[in-house]
Every structure is written in C-alpha cells, then in structure tokens.
Image 1: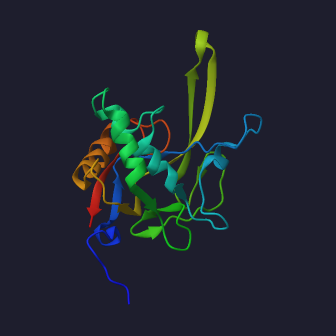
Image 2 (image 1 turned 180 degrees about the horizontal axis):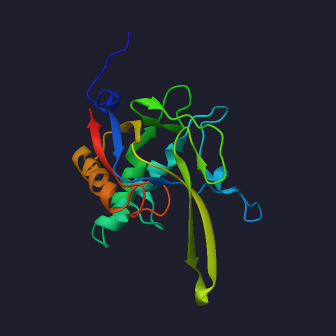
Length: 204
C-alpha cells in the first residue's frame, strides 16, 4: 500500500485549461530547417503533422514565456535585472501541451473547431481566409529584404493545457499576468506586436 505524505508534490501541481482569443490577425513564418531551403509563402504555415489542421507548435508558447534572446513576455514587461530569473522560473516549473493525440501542437480554432486549410490560390486560401502579406524589411546598411508571409484573419483562438509545478520562484498569478499583458504587448506568431495580439478568454 502506498502512503501519501505532504512531500508528494504530485498533489500540488496546478493544471489549467487556457484559451487565448485573437484580437488581431496572426502571421506565420515557419522556418524551413536550414538557410538554403526557400519556402513559398503558403508553405510557411504550421499544420499538425499528417493533417490539414492549422496550428502553432507548443514550443512557441513556451518561448513567449521563457525566451532570453527574443521579445518574450518577461523580457518585454519585467525589470531588466529580474526578467531572466522570471523566464527561467517559467521554463523550469511550467509545461504547455496540446491535445493528447499530439501534445506538441496546438490547433488554431474558429468557433471552437480546428481550422482546416484548403487549397491555396494566387494570394489567398478561401476556406480559412489566409492571405498573402508582402513587406520589405531592411537589413544592415539598408539592404532590402522582401518578405512574403501568410496571415490568418480573425476570428481565431488557441487552447492548451498549462501545468504549473510546485515551486518557490513563481506563482500562478504572475504567470497569468505575463500571458495577459504579453498578449497585447507582444502576441503570437511573427511580426508580433502588429499581428498576433490576443486576450485570455478562459483560464480554468
């Protein structure tokens, strides 16, 4: 017989179902895996492997909460002397996962149902409304870098399971604050801050 004591921290883990609701269109720019492979604009979306379901990798949410070298919520919103400790605490004591069938991918939803991608035309995919966005970024010395990227229009939402493990470094309320503030300050996807803004629709 197993005797459970107060030191059994499995009982202390907090699990939340989180739904984020987009308030701006979201842009994608999936990396091909190397710097030589050029993707067509419509190939830069993420899809759950083996399906036509549009998604974001769960690691993108992890990066939103933990990254040091990109504009994560702690780096953008917290004291410059403390943000690394906050980001490290999020990395150590939280876990983000999607559906049991494929926990590493978070389906994008519309009206509560996964968004399924149809056939792309010249600059649009009629089923989802995904459209081509063209822009020119400027590299060092003013060198133009033309970009073609896909954008999903509103409405969209994303749902995931957030596990928070017992610790003395960061509490649930601070994690929620980072998600809530970061949703408007940073957002998800690429070209963040312009695209990909969201609010918390559900945290339960």
